Image 1 (cartoon, rainbow over the protein chains, first blue to last red):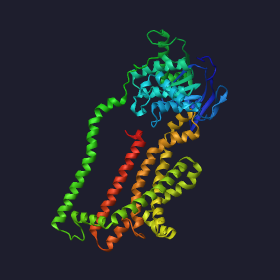
Image 2 (cartoon, one colour; image 1 turned 90 degrees about the horizontal axis):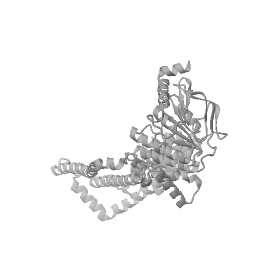
Image 3 (cartoon, rainbow over the protein chains, first blue to last red; image 1 turned 180 degrees about the vertical axis):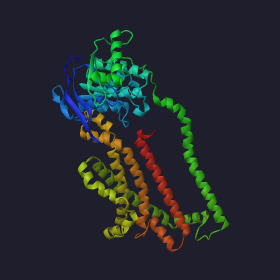
Image 4 (cartoon, rainbow over the protein chains, first blue to last red; image 1 turned 45 degrees about the vertical axis):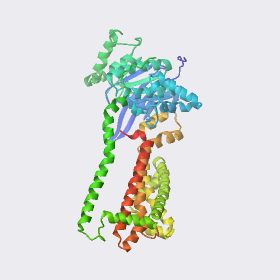
Amino acid sequence: MTRMTAEGDVRVDDVAIRFKGKDGPVTALDRTTLRLRPGTFTALIGPSGCGKSTLMNAIGGFVAPSGGAITIDGAEVTGPSAKVGVIFQQYALFPWFTALGNVRFALRRFGLPRAQEIERAHAALAEVGLGAHAGKFPQQLSGGMKQRVAIARTFACGPKVLLMDEPFGALDAQTRLGMHDLLMGVWQKHRATVLFVTHDVDEALLLADDVHVMSQAPGRLIRQYHLPQPRPRAFNRSGSELLDIREEILGLLRPEGVLAAIH
Amino acid sequence: MAVSDLGDPPAVPRRGARVMPLGLLAGSARVVRPLISFVFVLAIWSGVGAAQLVPETIFPAPWTVWNATVEMWQMGTLAGDLAVSLSRAAIGFAIGATLGVALGLMTGRIALIRTLLGPFLSLLRPIPAIALVPVAIVWFGIGEGSKYFVISYTVFLTVWFNTHHGMEYVPEIYLRASRSLGASRRREFLTVIIPAAAPYIFAGLRLGVALAFLSLVAAELSGASSGLGYRLQEARQYIRTDRMFSLLIILGALGASVDMVVHQIGRKLVHWQQG
């Protein structure tokens, strides 16, 4: 596989995002600088409403920064593109298409002959274990299955960067664990630079190469951890260091912890 | 890789097992319940008729109405009126619905057209169809043109309004998904925005059908020489309440059946909208 390409280099340079609120401008994201190295998996964790999703929306090109710049492989982000795939918590599958149709939608931009497009869509669904459900509509699938279709759909498009906004937040704990394995498998095969927003510390520590912790609103990055532990990880066999980091992050996420880190 | 053991069974069979019998019950209730109501009202009506509490010329009994229906059928006027009225409603609906969907797609997505036309069209909506008849007659004469105009105009406004709103409420997340999957604006419009608005468009078409029948009668009440609405007017001149009742029942039944057909077509085409 072409895994060592240096594509998917994300640089967030001094970006701030403000919205117009009822009583003047509201700062959703304080000046933030962040680099995502090509092919790495970064988790972004913080209290709800801290601006994690805002930062993600800016990288996805859905929200324009009020200051600073975001570049991917040297090109400034000016809007959504197929280079940046997005996995939404609410799946965002098109209910008028079958699972296969949803994946074909993503493949359409390659202009493949019909038969080949269908074949590739089937292969993408098989990869996430849904080969037998290609003809089903999203509303006939469970939450975990929908998110697997969404993962297949997004990877089918061949993104260099993958943004995941609390992708497993709506799933039960059991399904979540299965989804972690699945995501790791698909990601290691396709390689993309992943930014994974979550409020689940364990999820971040089990999946990511780098973990960034954000403060309460207006959000800013307050601490960063690099995790060299080999995957698949588990708290009982990946060393005590993970547990120490876990304690630290949980401390930071408590309101008083955040204050202490700022001052 | 093997991921078939993720432990999340498909949602539908699980839910289906419990809902199916209920669904069947609901299905038969849909047929039986209206029948109960019809039989009930017919029984009271027959009772009133048999007791002769009210003169027949004012309030005819069910069998008198039935006889009037048979009479109109045998004279040949009923079949002719039905054909004329249905074709007026159909042509008026087709013109109005086509324009309504087309313009709704435009005002829903193109800011300039929305600014130019949206508020004006909203202002037209409260004007009742019957108020347009005099204008229509001046513009199009008493021929078919004025009928088509009145019907298509009312259908147009309703279909436009619903299409327009459907376009405005396309969930942002679909657009984000479509753009991040590399869809062109054209493909996004055809395969994301229109399907997302389709439930609203169908709701508008369904209302449009009902309005086509309402405005049909308005259009035929003045300046027509055939059609169900004209025949109602004619029955008034001869004080034939039995014929009036017959025509009213026919109009009701026609409207309800066409509505049911449109509803079923809509359910098939926007199949994802249930539940």
